[in-house]
Amino acid sequence: MAKEIILTGDRPTGALHLGHYVGSLRKRVAMQDTGKYDTFVMIADLQALTDNADNPEKIRQNILEVMLDYLAVGLTPDKTTFLVQSHIPALYELPMYYSNLVTMSRLERNPTIKNEIKMRDFERSIPVGFMTYPISQAADITAFKAKYVPVGEDQLPMLEQAREIVNSFNRIYKCDILVEPEAVLPDNASCNRLVGIDGNTKMSKSLGNCIYLKDDEKTLKQKIMSMFTDPTHINVSDPGHTEGNPVFIYLEAFSTDEDFANFMPEYKNLAEMKEHYERGGLGDMKCKKLLNNVMQQFLAPIRARREEYEKDKGELLNILRKGTERAIEVSNQTVSEVRNAIGINYFNDKSFLERFVK
Ligand code: TRP
Image (cartoon, rainbow, N blue to C red):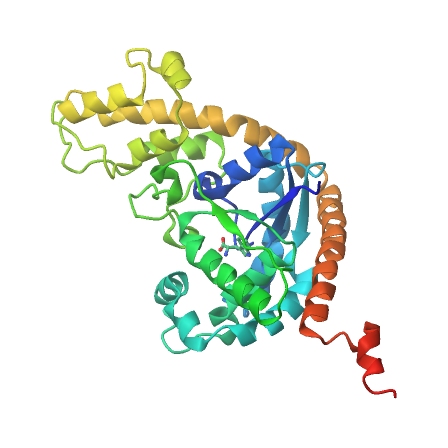
């Protein structure tokens, strides 16, 4: 039986950070490694252009950067097909058909879009391409007939939109060509929207509060030591808050019981440590030191793999080119089914000619 398909992607607007990791990369690697799925990972350069049309250089610079991050976290070309969005013809054609199935008001209601418009101060000068990128994203997913889409919670409205398009398409054109996708979310709430080191609700490059997968040992340590904690926890003896406290959120997202055995044996697990912090008597410095140990241990193999792959940029580009070629084939097949379903395949449809030749 054909394997079920996974597709997901990232905009190449900067190096990937811990938010990307816990939000989606971790799940992708785990799913890839089961060997049960056909996995596609896309560099969404077209989507990146929707709000960076005047700065394509930023996107160019980040194509191989994102490839490096992918390979560094353990995605591998023997198990995952890497592709670049702008080189896939299907991703230009499908949105054209889908956009007739979506109303303007439906796009305007999309909470992710609403939020991004606010963050970018677009007001009324919203590029059309930006407004319609949920349609393009539905094409990304359906072109490969993906069933699973590992993403963070912020992408749920995109998946909802994609499902609506799939259902409208299959209903209107009386077929079952398109596959309804579902999101694969991270395991716990701390991972769903990882806070920044400043405590801001989202780790984001534009807010300057990120820890990058490629941060070196010293940078990582500095960032952790400067992290926002609980402003009411002034003296070590004060009772502290762990909820909304970035140090504890990161520990929630990254630490294991084994880390406690290795780095802080006085507690069996995070729950015990939290309890002490909340009771009072546990200082922020000690918590940050633990977090630094946990994170250094986590990032060490990622940095090492990155260094290896960095030696041969040509090979990186080859991996991306080969994956893109395969992706073109797979998605062209879907396009041809879609054209058949709509009935615009005039040159390969015998019944079309027969109608007119008596
Ligand atoms: N919108 C996603 C993001 O901003 C990137 C993306 C583009 C994507 N196309 C996709 C994610 C298809 C999942 C599936 O991170």
